[in-house]
Image 1 (cartoon, rainbow, N blue to C red):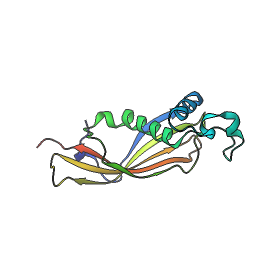
Image 2 (tube, rainbow, N blue to C red):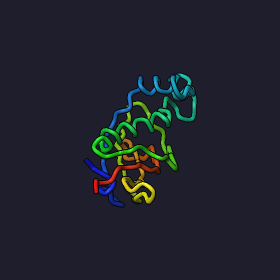
Image 3 (cartoon, one colour):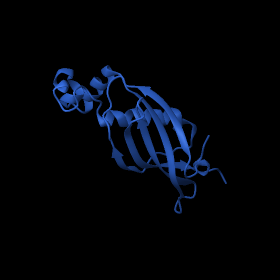
Length: 147
């Protein structure tokens, strides 16, 4: 079980991979981001994307699942106080295989609550062509080792 004290700046944690399924892309978008280039293959073909692309929010959700399965469930995570930046530099398409990493940028022990600390990190997803499709800069709070 990793605690705050185990995280060091510069460490890169592999998070695993996920295959992007067209039915899931259409379902997610239909519920949460119903823009035609996410929900309608015929309409999407006429857009600048030239076909269906995953919602950025779906991409974030896939990244979160990789984060939980690949790292977070074996830590003392106490949640996140927030994300500072999200970027979707390249569209995600059905059939893509996305691979994630979590890179620790810095750590800071809490001065007001000594039982925890904050890890600042970058999450990144890259597709099968090694093209970055998501970057998120944010924080995760972790409990510390018991005294």
